[in-house]
View (cartoon, rainbow, N blue to C red):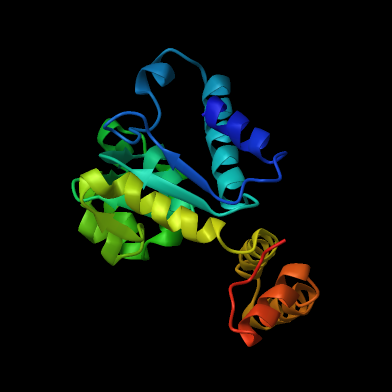
Length: 224
């Protein structure tokens, strides 16, 4: 977690990054926290671990550019939480998603925050209550992931989407993501008020003026 958080904070200082892909270097995306770590530590240490994990998820959710996650294999507990926290998720046909803490007597309460805001209530609760995994197709059906592809094509699909995002206006993308996050916290009337103001602001962007001009001239825009 520390390494990922440090990398995310480091990238915030780089102006040329337009999209981020998170993936695992192993065949298992993430099995969550190490239970052995909890067995050998105290309550104060436990609180630090969960606070750190929660902070990482908040950084990802509010990150300044789109975040894509590529899932190979199993995403369990905090791993499933991470998937739910990203903007776009691509997984393989063999991928599984679970919140299995209950099987060890530890309810996946923090993963439930992210998972419960992405999946329908009853689907999320069944995962949390039983610890049983859902398949890639079920995850797709209920919106935990965007695409299910052959295991060998996970990276290819993720990169294709990332390249599409990277080819668009970075300044507009950042503004749009920030607005989307903020308006989702508001009641609909306030959300529309915020979004209207943001669109007025967006129209003043150099890239927006170029994009409209390019559309009218029937050519590709040249982003700033």
